[in-house]
Image 1 (tube, rainbow, N blue to C red):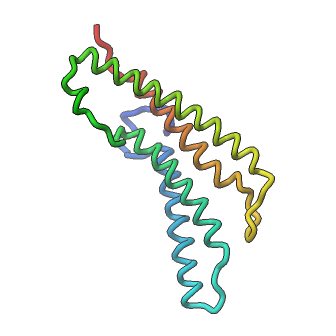
Image 2: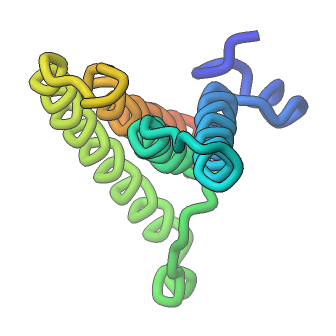
Image 3: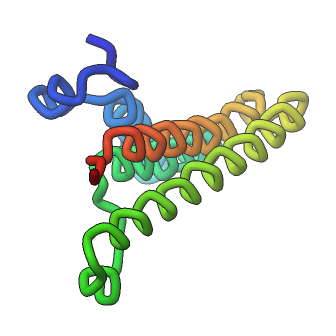
Length: 161
């Protein structure tokens, strides 16, 4: 089953998407690191010093890829007080315009975060020596997924004759 760009009916049936899988995996890593940090601090004599590095990277992945999953489900907060009063044709036109802006904006942010990831690849975390680009890859991937999902929503929008 193709997850990204695959059959939308299959995604609805199984409830799986690449965004959901990645966000949940990073969330598990985040929770496991925090739990281990608490246990190592209060149960053992030697606290885990690497927990902050891993949890901050996992948090970035969880937030940005999770936001892409919310985009895929079309569950971001929106206010339709004015647009709900507009004629259908105008309202659909504004929806396409807004989705086009979101697609372009997320694409631009993806490019910027990719540049940051490339620049930070030579720097490493102090405890584990992980390249900082690993943490910046989460926002890059999240913005890429959001741009792709916004574009898919534009292309799947019903047409008015």
